[in-house]
Structure formats: structure tokens, C-alpha cells
Image 1 (cartoon, rainbow, N blue to C red):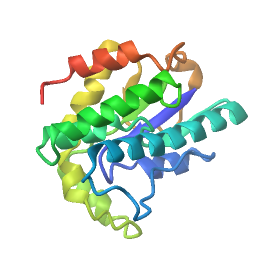
Image 2: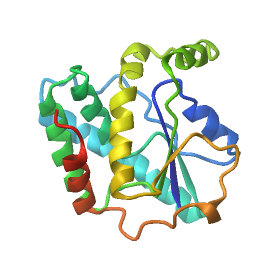
Image 3: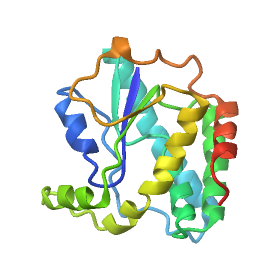
Image 4: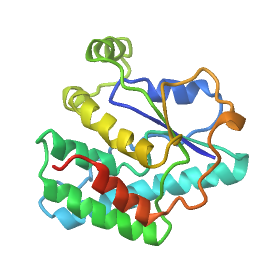
Length: 202
């Protein structure tokens, strides 16, 4: 079972993952070597590979313990779509990343999580939660907070196509037996294409 905690910056993803008491796949940590976007194909390849590394970590955790918990979705394709939706990045960035992700799906190096726990607090709550955690700089907090609405649209579309995959809120305990069973094909390119078609036009 692969479980993802997802939401905007300061939603409480890391706090929830830590509270599970077990190992979890940490969110991507910037290295300072990320592409600047001048070459969109290079940028898309970089992020697809970085996200595939987190997906591999999740599979290794699942194989070792029976469950993988991820701090944010390793697929992460929603990020460039959300940026385009609010006008913070060109649509072409998303299109290149989609192509790179489809290649990763074909090689089974990326896929859909079995369960997404989605929490999108209201803007005032996000600000309060940000202020309560002085250990995190959150330099792009305002931008990431603005992505909350398209993020909800992304996972809402996924839930319509595959009911039960997306659950709202971070529960105090996760009862695996009550969750929808793991999907037989996490690398379903047909579901990926249907998801893109289900989303509002950019």
C-alpha cells in the first residue's frame, strides 16, 4: 500500500508523516542545481527523474514493511499544471513534463499512489500553521498557497475517475483494512490520459 499526504505548503504533510511513527519518503529537498527553465525538455527530464527516485524509495519501503508513506505525491505532475492554471508558468512546461512522465509510466518508474490523503486548509489556517513552524523557511509560501484551488481540482478529477483513491484530511490513525485495496496497475497510462482530459482547460 502506497499512501501519500498531499496539500499546499504548511498544510501539515510532514507533521502527519512524522506522527505515523514509521519511516516515510521525505519531500524533495532543493539542491541548488535545479534547471532554470531555459531548456524546457531538460527541466522536464530532471523533475521526472527526481520524482522517479522518490517513487523508487516508496516501493522499497513498501517491499520492506508492507506500506509506504510519502510526504507529497512522488508523481508531482500536478505542480506544473497548477502553476500554469494560476499563470505562474507557461502551459508548455506542463506539456513537456507530461511527456516525460508518460515515458516514466511506460518504464514503470512512476505511477499513481494507492491512496492520497488530501488536506487543503483555508488561507488563514495555512498562515497560522506556517507561523507555528519557525524551522521551515517556506520562501515560496504565497505562491504555493495560491495553488490550493487548482490542486483541489487535480485531485478532484482523479477521485471522479477512480473513486476512493483520494481521501480528505489527515486521520489520526490509518486503518489499512478500511482503505480501498491497492490498484492492480499503478502505471496506467490510460488513467493518466483520462485525468488530463478531465481537468479544466488551461
